[in-house]
Length: 153
Image 1 (cartoon, helix red, strand yellow):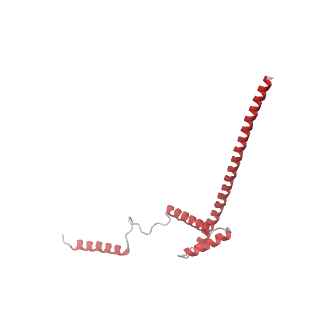
Image 2 (cartoon, rainbow, N blue to C red):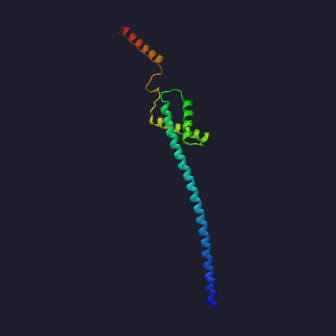
Image 3 (cartoon, helix red, strand yellow):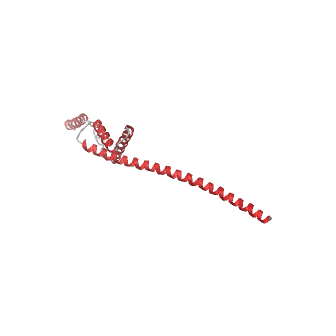
């Protein structure tokens, strides 16, 4: 009888411990699934952003092609970019339009600068300031040569 009571107490203790572990496991599992769901939602958001960014980048290059021979067309390009992007992504906000346009322009400008595709027009280590300075420099050289030739030795 004493053995049965001890066995009963031990089995109840084991069952209580297993119940506690099971409830803890369920709580951890639910938390894990909630976090996994949040990550999936964020990933879908990132994927949608990446998709919209690619569309905006394609439209940027289309607009650049349309206006490549028109100088000072910044405002026209902006309006055309916004119009085309609204057609491709209905419901896009003005803030998102501005973000995509500024982001893409900044990235393109950075790539151009890094690639040194557009060198500065004036390089002080190689070039002379302006035509007037060049003319004065040439006049001084000619005057010096004339003075050296005219001076008797």
